[in-house]
Length: 170
Image (cartoon, rainbow, N blue to C red):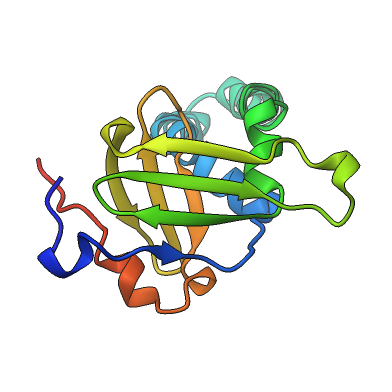
């Protein structure tokens, strides 16, 4: 990973933040939905066109809409949203980022009985890449299918977070 020289010794501390379940769903399901939506759109359009010539294709289209799509949603729900990782992702937390060293995630709770863990440390060597969207910083960690999601408004200066983004290589 290559970072700007002025970030090497700077510690970045976020405010306490919480990811909404909807935000987590968008990030977790984006990979699956992107691949499957292309296939579903092609099948749906093909069935629509074919139904002009044979009405039985309209029945196939109805089956795709009412049988296949709900099962895809169930798969995403059970494989991505009902996991301990999902619980950690949507719980209140703050992060301390020391570039080229580690990231410490501190979990917070209004009542200590429901706090999942106190701290989790991610060594910098386990970070595959860091990307961003308009509102989020996504830290992709080795061995995890879902990136660490940090809203940019959790940073005191969002530009600090954007300086961590690794350039895309294709």
